[in-house]
Image (cartoon, rainbow, N blue to C red):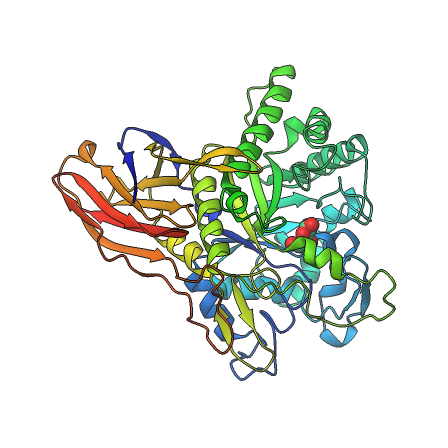
Length: 504
Ligand code: AHR
């Protein structure tokens, strides 16, 4: 049995827990919208056509923020297709995912859904095929109170009050050659800066996200961020980061250490942004919007894509990855990384919410269920409260092909000064060995005790949840978590994620 220890202290604060860390993403892609959040003929559908089973799971997941409407989709999207009477809405080609968009769901429907789900909306603008004017138009429709043409159009479509969207993404992944309207960094930087300036003239308090690289493996990574920010630094608040992880050639050891890569990615983007800020002698400090992250079996998807396809399906099944216990442990670890980096990452969106690489799966006319990755997200969102604490980890390492020697244990903690509660999130990345963990709690004054403790583990690391067995993998109460004399002791099974809430 391996052993490891953690030292926690309420003085080691990183930053407040940002609720926006628990964001998600709804793209008009595959079955995320149609037969995902929206299915008027479904037995659970409400009067607006939304699946109430999916709404209930979204609330249970603890989602705070939802990016909409794309993704690659948004770079060819005309927002005005999705407003007004349903019968007048055009059917259009979606080039990104080679399907037909019926526009049954648009701004009005999505905003209504977001209200019911209790989530903030992060609206992504099309800077692929469109520009400053269209960005101003959709902003006017969403946020202008009254009297202007587009504000009155919104009101005539039933939304008397402005929607008050605060966060706007200035396009999506425009560094990627696959993106409709792909641009060089200078072209994009100019367009992002001009769009940001115009939007700020309309509403100074907006929070604007410039596109960073679509992954850290892009050949232009970091050079893209630097060139874009040279032009847009003073008028944006965030630079985006996107990262998807999967086991490559069966290398589970490296896959389990994906958070090492996410930490490095965040540090690199922050360093690049800070270096531009320093060159510009700016006092501003940009934050990172990690607005696409998840496990995604991307290589299998790329291999299955048919470049010669001639059909144009509506809401086809696209990247409906079925997640394993191991995937859930990696997702739990990525959430640890996002929390640990809360001084720079203040918004993050798991991609996506329903069906498309998602924590929630549905069948048309049938059930909705929680994938394995649902559980670490829901527990972290519920238990992470107050301030993020840096933790000192002592323990063994293991060798990985991609990252060299990495710690077997990864951890982060939060402390809620209001209630005194402490939450500890830990991962045992070892594939065969359990880990005996001791956590020193001396700095918290009055004694703490375990209020609740949950572990995700399984004898079969490939176990998954399905429509037939939706609860095959669920968090179970951690059997031996206990505090004695200021020391929390707990056994972490191989390939496991654990969350513990301590209270006075
Ligand atoms: O989330 C799926 C896709 O991944 C998004 O549309 C795109 O932005 C990213 O490449």
